[in-house]
Structure formats: C-alpha cells, structure tokens
Image (cartoon, rainbow, N blue to C red; front, side, top):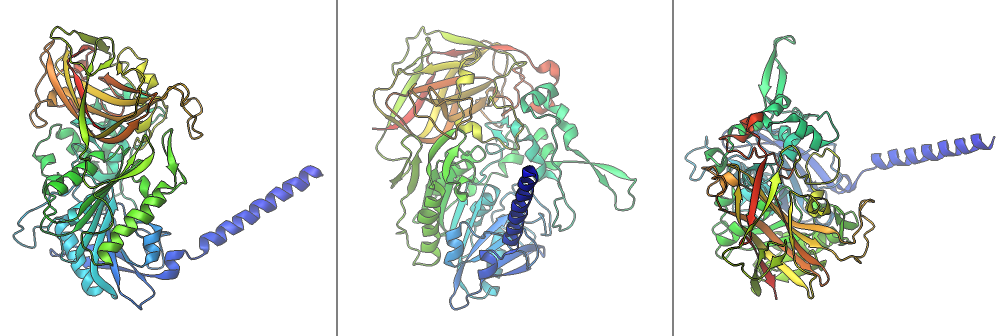
Length: 638
C-alpha cells in the first residue's frame, strides 16, 4: 500500500510540474509583452527580396536606434505571432529600448536569390546587377531608416561567427546611417578559419560542411540541407578506418527527386564539399572570398568593437585579423576589441560559472561583458553623442592565468619585451642559443597510430573543449617532443602573438608540424569541481595555444613545394595572440608533433598535388627531426 501511495505522489508531482512547464511555455515572454513584430520582404537593387523580421518597441513615446543582424542561420521563428525568447545582442540591450531586426541573407531560408558561401566583395560596382553583402546591407539599412516608424536614424550591426562576417562586411561602403558595428568571432578567411588552418583541413568539421553547401530553389522555413550521420560514436576510429579523404565523398552525394516524378532521382553533390576538395591550395577561389583585406575603417566612420574568446576553436584567426586590419587601415575612426575567457560565442551565454573544458575562470563573466562593455558600446554610438570618448579602452582583455580583466590603450601593450626560448637536446627550453653543432631530436610519425587531439571518445559536430584540454596524454607518447622550463620562480605574462621558428627535416617529402604552448600546473594545484572525473588539476597540462603548418605550404599557400628528404628546412608558424600569466611554481612547456587526429586530416607525408585525392599508397610512415636551433618567440610583460 505504501508503494502505491508513493507512486501516486510521484505521478501528481510530475503532473503538477508538467502543468507548470506548459503554463510557463505558453506565457508571453518579454519580447512578446514589450514589442510588436512585423515580417517584410525588402527588395534589393537587383530585384531580389530578402526576408526580414522587425521587432519594434510598443512604447511609441520616443525614437529608437535600429540593431540589425544578417544571418545564414535563419531569423526564426517565422510568423508575426511567433517571438524569439530573447532578441538583440543581450538581455540588457533588449530591455533598454532598441528596434531589433533580423534578416535571412540572400539565398538562405525565406530569402530569395542564390547563396554564395563567403560571397566575394565587389569594389567599384558598375550597375545594379553587381551585388554583394555590402550592397545588400546598404539597401536593407536604407529601407529600414525610411520605413520603420520611430527610428532615430542610427543603425548598429552585430553578429557572432558567420553573422559576424556579415557584420564586418557591413562596414565596407557603409550606409551613412550605420554608426556602430560589432563583429564577434567573425569569419575572416575560409583558408585559415573554421575549415582550414594554414592549409591543413579540419577533418573534425566534416559534418558541419553540409550546413553551408546544399542549394535550395525557393524560400523555405524548413531546413533543406543534410548533414551526414557518422556510423560510429568514436570519431578517431571512424576517420582512421575510412582511410583517404576521397573515401568520404559518398557522404556528400545526395539523392534529389525531380519535380515530375518520384521515381526519377538525380545525384546532387554538395557544392561546398566539392569546393574544398577541388581547391587544396590558396588559389583565386579562396583569395577572392577573403574579407579581411578589404576592411578599412577610415572613410565610413563606423565605430567597431571586435569581440572574441581566447579559446575560440572556430574563428580565432578571423577575430584577430579583423581587428588588426581595421586598426591598420583607420584614420580617426573608432576601433576597439574585447577578448575574454570564452569558447566560440560564449560571451552571449551566461551559465554562472565560466569554464572552457576543464578550466574554471570565474563567475558571471559573460554578464559583466554584456552589461559593462557591449551595452555601453551600442548605447554610446546609437543613443549618445557617438564621439570617440566612449569610456571604453582600446583593448579590454582577460588574463586567463591571473583570471582578471585588464584595459590597455593599445594592443598589444607598449611595455612588452620579446623573449626567445630554444629547444634543447634534453627536451628543455633554454634562453641561450645552441652551438653550431647542435643535433636534432627525432621521432617516428606512424600514420596508422596518429596522435589524438583529445583523449575523449566521442563524435562532435565542432570541437571546442580541446582548446584548454589536459595534454598529459600526448606528452607521454614517443611521437611527441616535449620541451619545458624548470619550475618558474616568478610569474611570466605572455601577451600578443607567438612565433614558432622551427628547423626541421623529414625522410619524406611533406609533413605537418604542430606546435602547442602549455601551462603545466604544480602538483599541489587547487582542484576544480568542473573537471572530468578521471582528471586532476595536479600537474594539469593546460593548452594555451596551438597551430599547425603543412610543410608544403612553408613558402607559399598558393604554390606548394615538396620538402627535400633529410634536408634541414625552416618552418615558420604564426600562433594567434594570447594573454596568460604563468604563475610562480608552474612550468612553460612546448609540445611538437606531426599528427593531430582527427582535428586535422592526415598528411600522407609524401608530396601529392591534392591531398583530398590522395591514394592509400601515398600515405607513408616517416621519421622527422627537430633541430636545437628551433625557437619559440614570445612577447612578455615585465
């Protein structure tokens, strides 16, 4: 009897919870209560209509700025009675009073036209038939300021990742009403962002390719693209068993029914997948799609704030290159950057405790950014006088070792000193240059047992956690060279970009060279409650920065060259900026390896014109050498 009474009690509790949940879901959210929603098609100069959702404050007693996001990911939910639970860049801005606008970009979702993945910019357009994302943004803003009631004539743009790319694009040939833009983790160049790193293909993004490469014929509110389902929960083993990349082609060949007959099927190939496998080098296809070289903040007078995360696995290159290009090409225009302890887009989410992987950085860091930085930026340039005295610094950056914010008038800071470490024979780091007869350390790179990028057994859509992962598992492999300092007797703050200038050799004619910068924690390091259960912070090998260089691209990304077997060769690798204090009692460690699987694809270690079309017989085990006059160059704050 007691069992049945308990069972009835549980049933009633679950039923009551379900009723409350349904009631909560059916209740109007903040946007529904305080905004009106309108859906329109805005005609571009060439006649193509772009679907646009407009959220306007119900309070008509004053005028509001417009905040615009253009996205390939859909401005759902569709329907004027359907509202997003949150609109705008952050909750504070939503409640402060803005007209919030979302638009499906050309060729995506409910918009007409043809989609072009990273559509190239066209300077000096001759007529209305020449369009790009700059002209589409200009035409959209022009329509909005002329047709949306109660706007104050000022517009801001924002977006994360691909929408960040469109935000950067909006600053080129900008509409006069565009006063502020915040590109956040923006894609800058697809040969260095997301799907490639210095010419190496990020195999771990294989499934994500389908998101961008499926064409559609008409506007749709339903997903039309397909993403392959891998027949394994172990991505390492799956890709290892698959062999050469050409064996993966079948995952991006779709069957499409003709309109006339359900029996008449035609094979449709994913155009982005084919673009990748047919353009292995940095040729005109990729060059024309690069946006960063066109970014000039000198004539448009658009205030920009570039935002990113130190552990952004997708678009770290785009974040820093966007900021640096805007900074290099500005006159009196306002340009600033904010970099915090986040992975991709983490600043737009608040989970209380801020962690990336196993590493904890503090509490409510995203909320601090949203209230004190992002809201302040848009308020100043869209509601206040909009001069260059915004109250924000040039660089608002988070020290991921000390775990605190810093403000600088320039980036990198002025008070920096270059520090060079050489890779010694006994796998130590030395500040003294080796003698001329310094020997090399060798390791065997066996493509049947490549070095994993993570010890986790999983299949992920896009990898992120690895950016701070414990690297002990790699340090204990014979095909990973490890160099480290003695225990530090004082703090060292690494700031700005890093250069690895390696002197190497291989028995083959090509090889990948991977460099990882690591903070080794002391044995008595404080434990972190957010860590994976099998790990301890004691002696944790925290990865700070990492990068790969494909050997054949050492001199040119456009014109690859085979390496000469057994010849000492210079390989220079640029690693993105860092701001991290290695504490007294820690060690600085460098790891060098030649496989990083399946984060990147396997290099056959024999030169082939196109790795995507390499045969199984092209893949060879080789022996690699790293000479002692190899060096890692840091910038440090004294």
